[in-house]
Amino acid sequence: MTTALIQKDHQAADLDVARIREDFPILGRQIHGKPLVYLDNAATTQKPNAVIDRITRYYTHENSNVHRGVHHLSEVATAAYEGARGTVKRFINAGSEKEIVFVRGTTEGINLVASSFGRTNVKAGDEILISAIEHHSNIVPWQMLCQERGATLRIIPVNDAGELLMDQVRAMLNERTRLLAVGHASNALGTINPIREIIELAHANGTTVLIDGAQGVPHLEVDVQDLDCDFYAFSSHKVYGPTGIGVLYGKEALLEAMPPYQGGGDMILSVSFDKTTYNALPYKFEAGTPDIAGVVGLAAALDYVSALGLPSIAAHEHDLLLYATEQLEEIDGLRIIGTARHKASVISFVLEGVHPHDIGTILDQEGIAVRTGHHCAQPVMMRFNVPATGRASFGLYNTRDEVDALVRGLERVIEVFR
Amino acid sequence: MSDLRELYQQVILDHNRNPRNFHELPAATRKVEGYNPLCGDHYTIYLDLDGETIRDVAFVGSGCAISKASASVMSSMVKGKSRDEADALFERFHRLVTGDSSLSADELGKLAAFSGVSEFPARVKCASLAWHTLHTALAGAENVVSTE
Image (cartoon, each protein chain N blue to C red):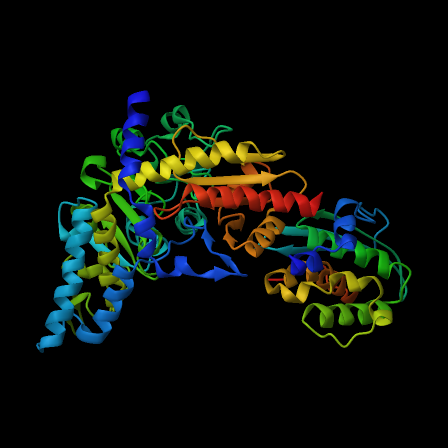
């Protein structure tokens, strides 16, 4: 453990954060006359020039529709779009580009699986297993599916630290469990789930596994083959890419057997009024003109992250997490919600006598952006018996100085309220 | 900081700490829930109506300082008033928090504590929740009010 920490500190030093911050033009902004301290990275991350410029270059020099024209620009756009698929494939080490489906985001990826895989494989009496700390996007699609199919949604409980009870995972998996869907990391608490172990247990039970990777990909190295997960969904905008685009990884054999999710152009080989032949993977799941600029922007973001190196990013964020945890715990009346042993750089907290919404407004006046509310995870709030929390979430460009600014901001909150 | 003091005036901080009429009302003739899903503010407002008069009013629930103080101030202002008077206060309150600065101190009374809210667009819904809920209760509907 000590060795690992020393090694991480060493890696943290590798990241030249002062220089990195120059890559993000928005970080130079002032908010209410104060320098922006952006600590809402679990909601969305800011974008580096590499991403902004790539999107501008696409629209300035390359814009055309993909997979259609024989003209030059269409070839350029198609090459950029398919090249990006290759970048994603390498980033998560998928076995084939056929396994990379571009969607609008994690939410659409999960809905695609619920709709296409779910309707084909889940029957009345079956069970779907999720955890008590899922984001609404990994709850509601399964609820809708269960309602439609007459299946049952079962919830893996967590302990008071916000960690999944693994003996419950073992106990709840049974011959009716068709699918298990859990987050790689919790957006509300920061808990990093032991997904490798969960996947092993589920597979031993013959259960298919989807990982909601929205909070995983920005912080952790993901190797979908090594994990052996069946589906893995993530969003571009949480990993420094543009909004409105995301990825669903699915094992080829599973995707091959699944019916299309939406019908339209690009997902067909031939159409007549009698019969339509669907296109091959991954195009079968990409109906309509895709978000081409979003896809090339996402690839630029992944290239940016790869160049810095996820191990270095993770080490830097872990350092911030430890430092911030230490500093926040010093504040009288502050309680951290979510104290798992393995955490992403997310800190949810409540302050005695002050509602999180008021904390958010006062911090905002200091230029500090945090999320306040239920974080699209109302069941988590109920589990921990709080109406809402404040949440500071750190990204690769945050600094210890910004943690100090947060602490000063919280002291200001206490001053206003006491 | 001046904006902040303008928002979190002493009256608001006081009503947040010690909300008035903050209890259930077994004799209530009407009971309506108000909910702001964005921030989770959630209140139940109880009304005891005697014809056109609000004989008693109370509330329970939880939320931010602005929403709780607003519910508290509202309850203390409308108690004993007629429906029409309560509706007139609601209308004044609405004008105040949406930036109408033409109201006199006399017209506003205790509502003046909420004069800073209009500078914080994200908080207008918090301030308005209890009033919208009261409005619904007076209109006779028994449902959940949302300011989303």
